[in-house]
Length: 118
Length: 317
Image (cartoon, rainbow over all chains, first blue to last red; front, side, top):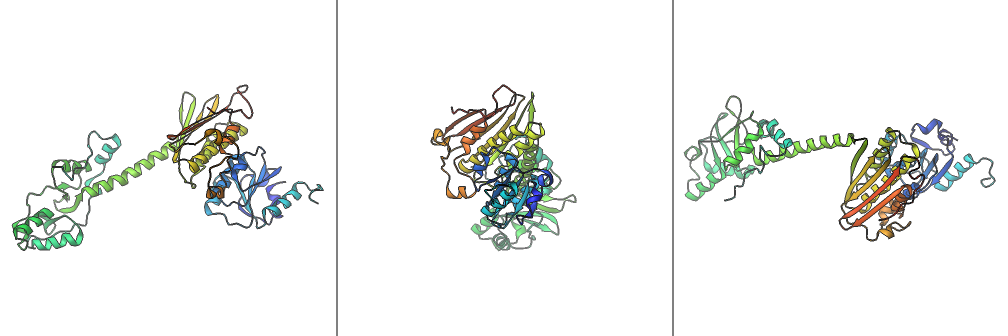
């Protein structure tokens, strides 16, 4: 699953398309509004789902090597957040879905045959 | 008596950058060109009114643009004292005016303040006509602006060039309390430097996580400090030094979930009490020392195999 595959299901707006947009393979999802918690995650190649509209989300995503940031709840990011995503080559999406729905959609895409999401 | 107008700056012994500036800058770059003047047939009272209206303390007297004298606030006070305030200026003005020339370096003006006790000096242009006036305030303002620009230039150069000596690269970044706009910038730069030096992705991540946690700690909890990167063939060291107020109980702060963060810090996505434990977790070696003078933390990540691998077991000292 690639970032370009999740844009439409999430009804997402692409605020910044980094070099991960077309080709990076997403293998997991981390959802948190607490960047301290994201920094202890050891996975790689995940999408970071957050309702926190702050530059620090982009910095954290960059440091842990997240493939994309998805800002939920239809929040409008501050201008600097978008600018930072562009300068750090970080893919940055925005959706009007809640965290829960965003995760549900991502789970269905990631595990299409799983009973848990049926 | 204390001389009021002396500019306490040695034009010979000041730091080279200041000496260079005061010789480089010309009087004409600094002086005020809109000069309030009076004519010699005006009365001293009109000068007094002019001084009050324009908040100035000296008025050059001119014929056309030719300087013929000067009246200072002292002259006006003396005139009031002695009852000749309604006399014509030409009867009482100082005729031996000490002047500067607009093409002289600024150092001349500073030396004149050392030599003479005047508060201002009229400035003459090439044709010996009055072209401006200079006060110690003009000099201080112009110097501050130029110094500000020079420091910015220096800081930009410092920021760009990591210092590399005997195979060890060193780079330092400043952090300021509650400066969220720039918080994380040091870590982002560190990541860039490590990637440029072809350090492997996993190690880069560990080092930047340590740097970011320590950097956010400084921004959130300290009065400000520095984050330093040291990169040698053997190891990456991230050092965080702040100027206080110190951590009350370092052992508590190293417990996961222990936090002194306020609600608004949490609303920014930080303050879960994971910072120091996480910095220690990703490091092969972790040292921290704290007093009211400041906190000093050092996270080391080895680059050579066999010298400690994977996630390290840090220790507090």
